[in-house]
Image (cartoon, rainbow, N blue to C red):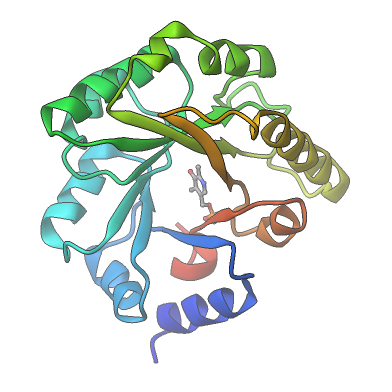
Length: 220
Ligand SMILES: *Cc1c(COP(=O)(O)O)cnc(C)c1O
């Protein structure tokens, strides 16, 4: 069995049933993704739209492609035909564009709203107030081609276990506070948090979706 297949199997055997594995394949060649595919993996995460689209064109059509990177509004159109979940949505304007492009393909695109939980200027995301502004906006109610299915966050890049735990706990509490909302196009079920270095902790803190790259495919 290939190294990649072994890693997939090992990680999957550690995940509780309610946790979904996104295999983060950015920068990796299609041959590597196919090893994961042949080991049964069907959900792949990419952070560049062009690269994801190239891989989508080349690879089997039963793969679910997740966009995990920051999305520029003018590039949404390139993935609207096929993307299965967009993790990093951080504005109403971006939601409106996703809605518009999804409509052209007669689809409903699932989205996660990205929440800013780290102590790093470089990371994207909404604060609690901006989140509630979006969830309660009239604009959202009129978007029939998107569905907000959960939240996503990235912890600070640090070895400090306590800090990461604090940030994950914070995201989980924001998630819990907004779980009661149930509308046509909004129902928070998915909490996307945890990467190679911190996914076990993320699951302890309530994650339902982990995004794992280097532990499967090796360092980038
Ligand atoms: C690259 C990336 C990951 C995966 O990181 P690893 O440390 O390689 O597991 C997860 N989430 C996002 C948003 C990423 O950009």
